[in-house]
Length: 423
Image (cartoon, rainbow, N blue to C red; front, side, top):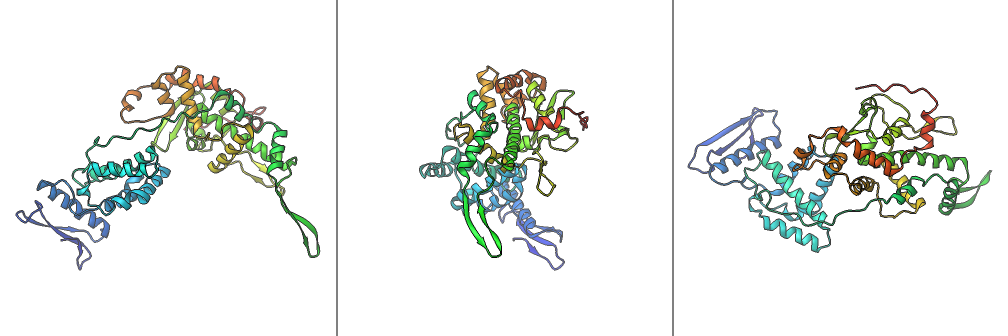
């Protein structure tokens, strides 16, 4: 009998101990503060145990949609927020319309393989189809760990991943050098601003002088070049991405308590894996960090340059916005003439590619990037940060990042630095 509310507010359900009428008929009472969902979950777990004792390994009459709903509500908390949202989107848009109404006990590996083949035939990339299958298996494995099912209908390892094209998009040394200089030339900047500037019509206004609306900043104006200087400061973030082999969010999230200049170490927290990688500071990375306006504690290492507005107020100077950095990177690509398909994340690929080309071992490349493949964790976990010094020095020399943006250099050089507060 499914959970029902009793007069005193508590919940009650009954079930056969062995999953059949030949066994004892048991009754369970749950406190009044138990929610309807929690009562339903407890009932399904009890049925799962009874079913297993009878030799059936699955929760009877539970659909994949029910398990997916609970996984999205609770299980995705172990994932990085953006990746959790992505997994939920994959389930909602593609997986649930096919497998949602299916009883979990009826699922077979062949069903999932046929689904994946149909998705590829419909135009989905092999990597996309693999992610969708991974989402299905995540739901089942999480439900198994949390006792919603006793055994998974798709045993571990039964479905092999489709081969995926290896992503080898990375900057050449010339492309990186061109991108790093994208905002340096005032004339190049003015010519580009002149091309994109669109003047609006001149409108007559009653009792006022005529005014032209639209158009934006004049290419040669102080405001235009102040904006260029603001964009130049973003290059420090891009340099940090290359020198550390990190993701954009990891560099934006760096704080001064993550920097230990005395020990020559940098703690980079990785939201995707919920753990930190510890890197040794190469000379170029140390110079880049020391050139930033000094802060303490949770203050961000890389901050946007503050700008003085017409009314005398100051704007900016806080943590970089990821969307602004993406726009700056896109504009830098346009001004420098590098391949349009290059992305910010390709700076991470570039770090790995350059290290590999320079002869760095796969073990050290993985530690620089902070990969945490379960099959490789034990093999790499014993490496100390000092073992990565040589690898990071290679990145520094190849990148040409010895010079930092003049905007942030002026903010630090020539005045006494405040000491970094140690955590």
